[in-house]
Length: 258
Ligand code: 18C
Image (cartoon, rainbow, N blue to C red):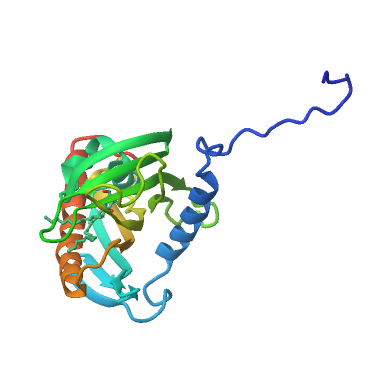
């Protein structure tokens, strides 16, 4: 119907974010908010029962023993401080598919099923098999976000990547040789800048990044609790050390990406 002159034309507001019109958007918004809030809580504020299970320099990893239907789903919370890199850089290398084979050692194959927008992708990954258990696969959306610090002028900005399992009609769970795992992961980064002497530029010696990595993985099928916990104890520290060294190496001769 023609719009008569003088009639108020309904205007659809522009999307606040490039992914906003996608079917997964409401879930992405909700899970990102929840995960950021959870990651920002200190270990003391997010309940009791966190056990330190790995420590190396500035890196500390905690887990809480939890089981669902006899399956280990221990939540993990790790904190690390790495000198010389920014939160934006950490999140860029964690999110972007083109670097994943460089640092993800348990990966067998990664497929980008959909690029939802510049800040959101849908991934299918198969991971290395641990004999005699079945091989695992996972489908998850991944979203990168900058949360500027509006409230506290001196407080650091936050960069985050959230990964969360979802379904895809073309790849139903447990239909092939793989058992589907379900995960929620949040990498949250705050960059600290030690102001250099007046008149001198900020270099990588003046910056450090506080990383909080939270993860909950449901292995999808039964595996002995002791085997799973031993696997976590070996693989999570290996991942965070290798990944952060990778970011340090990739960025050392590049301009700082704030
Ligand atoms: O967050 C991380 N990576 C992201 C990008 O890939 C993303 C994906 C995470 C998938 C993690 C699931 C990995 C399953 C691995 C299977 C075991 C392979 C071991 C091979 C050893 C040679 O978020 C970084 C993730 C860091 C992963 C740490 C290990 C987590 C173990 C999870 C176990 C799942 C059950 C496996 C069942 C095995 C039964 C004995």
